[in-house]
Amino acid sequence: MKVIIADKHFLSRTGLEYIIQKYFEKTRYLVSSVHGFIPLSQQIKTFMPDIVLLDYISMNIKAEEVQKLMVKYPEVKFIFITEWLPKTEWLPYFQLDIKWHLLKECDEQEIKECIEYAMNNQSFFCNKLIQFIQSNEESIQVIERNNMSCNGIVITQREREIIQLIAEGMSNKQIADSLNLSIHTVLTHRKNIMKKTNVSNTAGLVLFALKNNILRSDNHFLFA
Image (cartoon, rainbow, N blue to C red):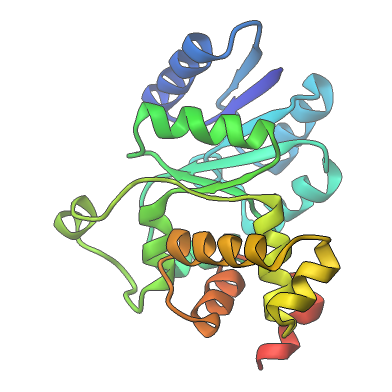
């Protein structure tokens, strides 16, 4: 596995290096503190990493530039790790098809798990971040953030498929037939999805999926 650690901050880079060295043997990594879209894009082209651990704020990379990187290098898994930001600054990035996002206050184990899930192409988000994005608050005080759970939320590829079909209005039987599953399996998946996303009904699930860009954009009109 090859990894680029793209972060301006020395302590953050050092911490990520430590995790890579501790948990992922035989991993080659490149540490980058260069600013901007073009230098990072050139480094990705040269190094051809499997994963990029990216603080897009410290690296001064805008949402539209992140999108360009994701389109230009579709095989690269971009794991975003940033400081806590106001919601207005985060939303442009969450409108992209991101699958992995952590906070710099996430602990060692959560960062390790996120990398592992990325290697298996399974989504992983910091739970604090998801709770904030789902809330009506524009910002949250430190004391409130400290009381929020930081356990990661993992949305598997199968769960993404089921969320998509739920959003398209399919019944449990139709979903089971479409995915060649039993109704019991579909119900189990639905229960697990609801628990992970902390929602209690289909409308809440669709809202979660829309906010976190889990649904394909061509189906968003269903919920206008």
